[in-house]
Length: 546
Image (cartoon, rainbow, N blue to C red; front, top):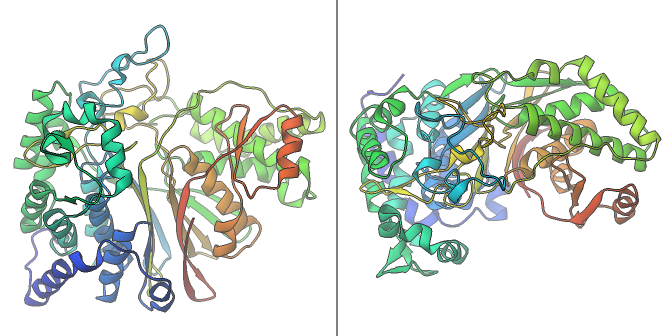
């Protein structure tokens, strides 16, 4: 670990250059020409992050250095989607030249005082006051800073002190407040106004910050500068910053304590994987969303789906594989360290054969499988993918939860908190029910694909519950159909959460959606998650986003 390493003259010059340049290039994305001409690699997923990451790569950093700097910058420049106090992150990293694959779990942890019935629904099925979504009870221990520090210590070549400088400059110098973000604040003005820290940060003269006004967060800049001088995020979890956070939670009847912050650890874990021909799909394990994607692919393998003739039965079989995976996701999954979760069974060949048999029967009889699940709206995430000239790839998703997360801010730190506790199921008997130190089930699906043992694709998405299905579509095209990255990411997508509703993008063949409607599905047009990916195809680095 390099937490206390000496900062030499070259490092100081680099840090100053990055900080000075941030205000000129952080708020616009790379041009098409710049994207195509890079020989250093790419970061893609958010305009500010792309520019910061490109600068790190050009200065000799690797993909991990670049994605860490990019993530920190995005956490300041896109405060509605994620944040330094965002609830969590999930990542996949192909290091050692793309030959070693590891997963990052930096998900939020529930405080020790959290109980299964903390958010128990009322008679109508709703959580009273929606306290699991908004307010101090909705926030757990933030995981993002611990996550980026961990991967940087293990796989980076630069210091945290260097890589956080663009984020500090953005917070200190500010940027024009986007109209869409201003609209979010206006539409929920009472929530933000009732929280002292949020009112100070997002209001001017008693009114929500208007579009195009300069937004600055000097308190957050000061906190990040304190961490930079220590070259470590340690104080955020076990120091003065942690004490400040804990005091604010106590003041507002939240549950997170200094002990909860001190106990938190991000962790590197073994990915889940599925082999399909010469490809291996590797993704972050529970409580991330990758198990659902792999379960659907395992069912396709049992169906011999890639050998079925094109047509409605083939399409319906694929949709039903997703629907079954979603049914299991929403009824059986949760933190495997806090509940009895049958993840081994769900990914087993035997279960895949059982699922395939059910699907074959339903398709042959011209009907859909019937089961009941609960749909929920999730959003507010950023995904970054990165590659470098050494063959390393990285996929990192980081989130507040929905827009601005819990919509509360630690006064004195400018730290808006994510609402990770909203990702628990409020029913006390559910495997994903809240509980002490549990990590909630979430939708992030950072994924790496290898071919012949070499990483060739890193991808992920933003868009809440639509992320797993969008990733399923991308991987189907890239792995099963052998499409290029551009073609795979452009392919039309379908969304389902296991119920009878199917949402198709406009580009989906209308003849198929019409035939599916005749089988009893509720068919409508809808959007998908936004995916961002990088690939190495025939030795050439590529990137794409849609």
